[in-house]
Length: 627
Ligand SMILES: Nc1ncnc2c1ncn2[C@@H]1O[C@H](COP(=O)(O)OP(=O)(O)O)[C@@H](O)[C@H]1O
Ligand SMILES: [Mg+2]
Image 1 (cartoon, helix red, strand yellow):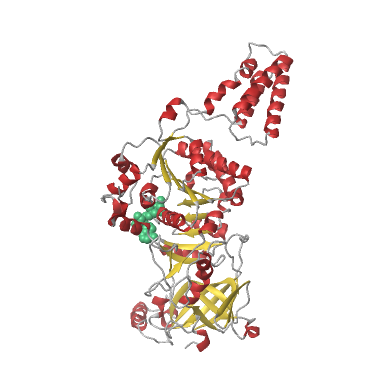
Image 2: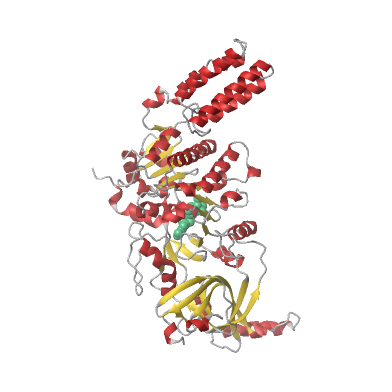
């Protein structure tokens, strides 16, 4: 039985859990935990539990425990060290004593006999051993209030071990967030709903899931986007499902957060069809080639297996009629930037610089160019202006005159044709006519306007990568220049291995892409630009980029190397991480430095299923445009 004043906070699973802390070990860790990554426990705790037949079915890895610690005296004996269960093992005395060298029939006899024991409450033959790691938090209880103090206090060996009950977990993770969201907080009754519009939760906590009322789990969408997040699990683990679930709720439960999805596998028009068909949210799907009609649209979409036979013509018609579709045009020639001009000059110096006079002229032209960039406070990656081209031509020609450059040579030819580039600065007549076509500049424009969801469903890697490069650098530059942080924009990279490969694996456009996105993640936070990275293989990714993520969702990663990398990059305990291998699609280990109610305390969750949301949407006729 629990002490009366503790049973409000802890549970003994209806008198089943009776456990003591039996040992605390120091463990050596090689990885150093950074400020923004998970905790790295220096200790491991061993707990022995009296056997009870139902207990094995109730205990779970990830459950949170409390043990009185050496600072408890000063706090009316109510200061506890918090632990998280990383491993559970039932033990049978008879089996433990069984030696491999004993007479074989005797071995079988003992093993068979032990079978029946597990169904008894025999505390003399069996017990349950638990390994747990400190969360580096103390819990202080005073009256009905909880206070969490960061830091590790040595727990008292021999003390009783308590399991945090449902209300305590709910309060610990959700109370502050619910208050931030302006939602009611009730200590005695958990009110929650899986429908995205009704409840901003992302799913439920896995602990106590067997009970009628699950505990919801909330995150701050604001901080999730601003401080970047990652989703890691093998293919089929539910990454795209989770990402679409998060994005849907982000759109419904933030004031004005905007989202750009780099959808290289064409999944999101289906996964977010309810949002695209929503007249209250401005959105756009950009495809690679023009889409003729809703039927054509259906054919190019990737559909989850469950929906392969579903009739989704109504929502697709709606999406089509709402003018949500557009296609990308490259702008035939990419408009020149100041960087391009400097590249030209470098090449001229190589090709034409053998004559000294040419070289003198080239140096002067370069000086003039840099002077313009400086005076106008420009960045070199910006697209040049028409005024600049006029200026450049005048200055280049006067340099040629001054140094008496041969007027039939390549340098002179270059200098006298700069204003010709002006034609590349504007979309061609053909492009102007086609109103569903979008150049990169027009996409930037959409984002600066009231479009909240922009889905770039383009399967051609080189095209979507080039877009990722230009769109992220344009937005970052724009924000820097305007000192602007609002509204928040989240850039989503599903299949992130395509966008942020490790430098030694990246060539050409891949190298530029990984570099740009790393810059976005490094600097974006200050300017309200966030990133989401989802991938099945983190081994060959740009680690600098990964280190910028402040929140991670980890599902099953079958390769040990990937798990080791997650464990060391984000300092999540390997023991806790191994548990994810048993997860079904939609179950995640969630750890966050900033976006959940508990900093860096990993928790197992079940995400709400986007497909359920879609089924509901398809069954009610809200998907039809009322006209
Ligand atoms: N939260 C969830 N609850 C239940 N099933 C899920 C959940 N998330 C995903 N699934 C199942 O897993 C399948 C694969 O999900 P998907 O998001 O496409 O995985 P990934 O992007 O990791 O390859 C889905 O079609 C769905 O059936
Ligand atoms: Mg996917």
